[in-house]
Length: 342
Ligand code: F6P
Image (tube, rainbow, N blue to C red; front, side):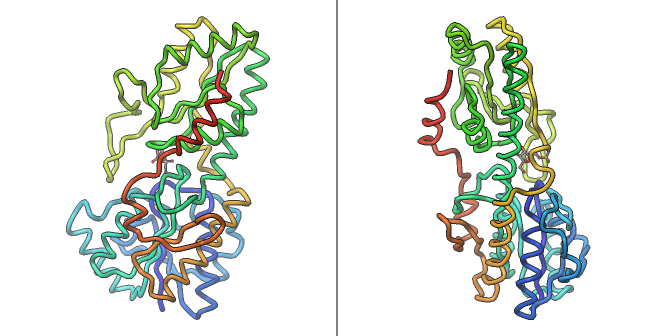
């Protein structure tokens, strides 16, 4: 059995832990594993490297992905699909493991429909994939965002400032919600709940009237105002899956708060710091369990599936269900966060 493995989309802490687990578990079954470089691009261009127990030794705590990644979509061009199919044949892959979010797993599903033996591993710091309770990488991003909120608290208090912190989360505000609860944010703005800037300013004003001299506002990059609902993008460009590059809504919110309340306001955009560096212990363990389970899916001929976490059990889910719709923030959880607003 020869397994090809790739990482696609935005990199994510824990990818190397998955790769290591796949190689080590595959070795137990006598399977060989070949790494495909830079996501689907490597399968189009035929860029591969054999992975061994030796080559994956020591990568467990390393951030990023040793295979490299890209946001390449082979289904944009028919000739690229042909190249992917012929390279799968050329390298003799009996099965593929695709580690990725909705885009990478969407491609995996289309290849499965074309007869490729593919299984998926759910990865994204955004935690917005359906059919799994958690994607690996999310816990690390939340820890980083929470630490950032903690740090902003002390400087906000010292200077009597409003601090706006913008975190990642394109269409789902999971990082903002969980890190906001963990860090005690005074207001959390997420894509799922368009905000009214007047209400946000009222909240800040009320806090100050009660004698609190600072406020922390956690904002997901995909947060949108009720009026003139529009995502704030860095530029007009879109990637191969049609996504715009978000970022900057925090600056707009910060300026408005300062203008409307008169309180000095500063904005921090956390950006890729949330994606870089070593994975948390939770993500290392989850990624390891996912990698082991992905090899077992292959052993059991369960193709077209993704490993998933339900409760504390690793299960399998249909790729179709994982990508059918984004998993947005549970509003019951957001309601809990709201209790602590203001
Ligand atoms: O992978 C998910 C994500 O981190 C989103 O939260 C964010 O909008 C996007 O990727 C950023 O992508 P890039 O690294 O390509 O700018």
